[in-house]
Length: 143
Image (cartoon, rainbow, N blue to C red):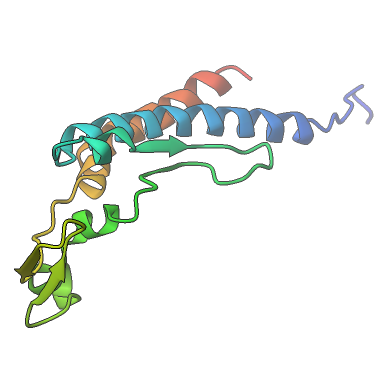
C-alpha cells in the first residue's frame, strides 16, 4: 500500500522560523510600549527618566525576549509611589526628613505614584495582540 509518500521532518526549520517571527513580533510590541511609556513618563527638569526608558528583546539564545523599562534606581519609586502614598500601603509611614546635597533639610510624606510603564502596556494590549498575531499569520500563511 505504499503510495510513494515520504515523511520529511521539518521541525527544526519550523522551530527556527518560529523563533525569528517571535523576535520580530516582540521587537514590534516592545517599541510600541517604549514609545507610550516615554509619552507617559513624568518629565522633571532634566527629562532623564523619559530619556532612559528603553527596551531589550534578544534571543537566538541570548534569551530575555521582551522587556521595557528604565535602568534608573528611582524609576520604580516613580511608578509605584513612596511613603504614605505608595501603592498597596507598601511605603514608609509617618514621613521622614532628608538633607539634599546642598545641605538643605526637607520633610516629606512621600510621593504619589506616577505610573508610566504599566499603563503603556495596558493602553497598547489590543494592538500588541494584533501585531503579534499578524506577524505569525503572515509568516506561516501557506507554509
